[in-house]
Structures are given as structure tokens and as C-alpha cells.
Length: 589
Image (cartoon, rainbow, N blue to C red; front, top):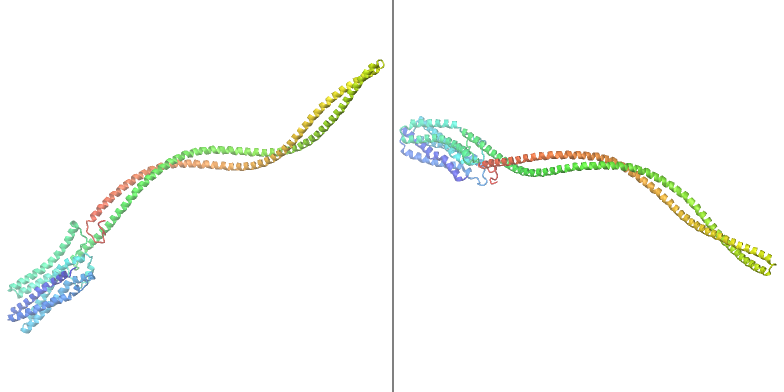
């Protein structure tokens, strides 16, 4: 706020005392003296000189009293203190005018009384007139101050000052009190003028102007403040809707109370708009976020729908596969049951095989003993056959010797026969004997030959038998080896059969457990097939629900966009209001 505006305000509220009130007092004083029939030509000049001097002193003293307004630092000014100081100025000015006018009037009365002899009633009348004039113009000073103070205080009203601060003013007038005081002062002032100045046209004109000024200021000040309220209301309704403009509240009268209520309404409206703006802005942001979330939700729902469809297809396939698995597991269960039965048979067979292996091992041991006996017997037979072969060879040698002897005997008998024949008769007997010997020799030779053949045949048989015995002995040896090996094989077979029996028992137990597990698996797969079937049905229902949810989400998204548009329209309407700086931080946003 510029200091020259404050100076003009301070000068204005003293104009009445400087240019009207003091001259009026001087004029009334001189008029009373003239009314008393005194010669005051010389006195009048003195009174005017004294009055003007006192008026200048009055004005300068008032400026001196108002020095606190001009001595405040512009950068560190206390706005509240200055506001209260300016509000008090009209009242301080009125008190100052009242006291100064009374002082000036009393000085003039005292000065006049010292120069002339004036009756007491006249002095009292003059003093009464001065008091009425002082009250009259001090009240005009208040009205002038209020008239010029209200526009000046609009700047403070925009800062949110209220009547709570005005309560610090010690004395104020309500509108009713002002009108009552105005009419009372007008009546008294008119009465005095009518009594003392009825023939003085100049005094009547000045009095009329003063009375008109008092009435005009009283009414115009009220009209001005009412017009300010009206203009603010019109501006809110039809104009720029400036919520930063507050009505000035100077004194706690009825209009100020209405202005204060209007200002509170403006503040509440400003706060309401701030709340609406904040809420609308938050709604727009939330709707944008919800719209984005809705779009993401739609995308997610579509993905979920696709996934659910895949799940439904997968569940259907799973149900089909589960049924197939169920059938296969039933087959497996049957096979497992068959395997279990076969394994039981295998256990029985293994036990029999084990018993047979044990029996075979015992038989092989017995066979081994017999083979040992055969082997030993074949050895003895082989030795005997060799001895027989040797004896047959010796016998053949003897037979050969006998055959040689028979041949020699035959030759000797033949020679003897030849010799006997040569002898003739004498030798006939000898020839017969020789013939018989030759026959015997031939028979012996034949017998030897036959025996030799028999011996050869026997020897061949013995050789064959010996060969067979050797072969049997060899076979018996081989059989012994095979029997030994068979014994070891039967022993290994017995061990293997025992191991196999153990394994078969374990397999049998595992197969039994597998059979039980297969039965449980059949039950589980049956449940899985049922669940898969239910899942497929539920997936179809979920898919249908998701389609409905997608439609609802699309409707919600459309509603959100519609709401965002409506809120944006509301924001645009709110931005038409001119509000305080802290209400809407940045309208550009």
C-alpha cells in the first residue's frame, strides 16, 4: 500500500475541521458577538488570525499523531498493526477534532471575554454552540473516514482480516446509533442556526451545506458499502467470480457484520472449491488410474479367459487322458495281478528247482561214486585184458611151436613113409605108423591152426575188449570229470536257485506292493478323471463368468471415461473462479 494514499486518507478526514469546522466556529463566534451588539471589526481580524493559526497547529499535530503509519519499514511492515491503526484513524481524528475545536472555541471565548464584557447566558450559548459544532464536525470526520477507509481497506480484506481484530477498537457506532446521532446533531445545529443566525444568509448556506454533508455522508457511506456487497455478489454470479476479493470490514456495525458473514461465505466457498478441485483432480487421476487398471484388467481378463479356455481344453484332454490312463492302469493292475500269480508260481517252481537241484546234486554225488567204481573197474579190466592179450600171444607162440613141430612131424612121417615104401614089406607097418603119425601131425597142425585162429580171434576180441575197456575207462574218466563239473554246477545251480528264490520273493513282495499301489493309483486316477471332468465343466462356467466380467469391465471403463469427462467439465467450471493462490496451485495443469 502506497504511503501517499495513506497520506491522502489522513488529510481527507481532517479537511472538514481545517476548512469548515474552524471557520464555522470563528463565524459563529463573530456572529454571536454581532448578535450581542458589540463592535468587533478589530476583534474579528484577531479572532481569524488566532483561529487559522490554531487550525494549522491542529493539522500538524494530527499528522504528528499519525507518524507511526509512515515510520514502518516497507519490507517488515506489520500488516495487522497497520490495519488496526488505519481503522482507528477516523475515531482518533474525531476525538482530535472534537478536542481541538473545543480548545480553539474556548480560547476564542476566553479571548473575547477578556476584551469585552459579555453576559453569562451569551457565554454559555457560545460554548454550547462550539460544543455542538465540534460534535457535529467530529462526527462528519468519522463518516468521511469510513467513506474513504472502506475502499482503502479492501486490500486488507483480501488478506482475510475479520471482525475479531476490530473488537480492539474501544468505541464504535452502529448504523442505528449513527442515524440517531446524525439527526440529533442536525436538529441541534439547525436550532442554533435558527436562533442566532436567522438573518445571516451566508451562515444559513454554510449550515445547510454542513447539514446536507452530514446526511449525505451518513447515507452515502451506507449505500457505498451496500453497493460493494452488491457488486461482489454480481461478480460472483455473473462476472469473473473472483473469490479473492473480500468486502472491507472496518467497524462492527450491521453492514460490517453482513460483510463479515459474506466474507466467511466467500472463504467457505473458496475452501469448498479447493476441496472440489482437489477431489475432482484426485477423481480424474483416480479415474485415469482406474481406466488404466481397467484396460490392464481387460487385458488380464482376456489373457485369463484364453488361459481358462486352454485350461478347459487341457482339462478335457486331461479327462480323456485320465480315462485312458485309468483303462491302462486297470490293464496294468490285471497284468500286475497276473504277474503276482506267476511270481507265486515262480516262487513255487524256484523252490521245486531248488529241491531238484539238491536232489540232482545228491544223484550226481552218487553217480560220481559209481563212476569212480566204474573207472576203477575199467582200470582192472583193462589190466586183465592186457594180461589176456599177453597170454594169447604166448599161447600163439606155443601154437606156432606146435605147428612147426607138426610140420616137422609131417615131414618126418612123409619121409618115414617114403623110406618104408622103399623098404617095402618090411616097412609097411612102419609106413602105416608113419601115415598115422602124418595124419596126427596133420590133425595137430589143423588143430593148432584152428586153435591159432581161435586164439587170434580171442586175441582180437581181447584187443577189442581192451580197446573198449580203455575207451570205457576214458569215458569213465570223462564221466567222472563231467560228474565233478555237474556237482559244481548243481552246487552253483542250488546257490543261484536260492538267490533267485530270494529275488523272486522280493519281487513277489514288490509285486504285491505294486498291486496295492496300482489299486490305489486306479482309485486316484479315477478321482483325477472325475476332477478333470469337473474342472473342464468349471472352466467352461468360469470362462462364461469371465466373459460376463469382461462385458461388465468394459461397461465400467466406459462409465469411468464418462465420469472423467464430467469431472473435467466440473474442473473447467471451477477454473472459472478466481481463487486464492493456495487453493488451486497451478491452473495450467
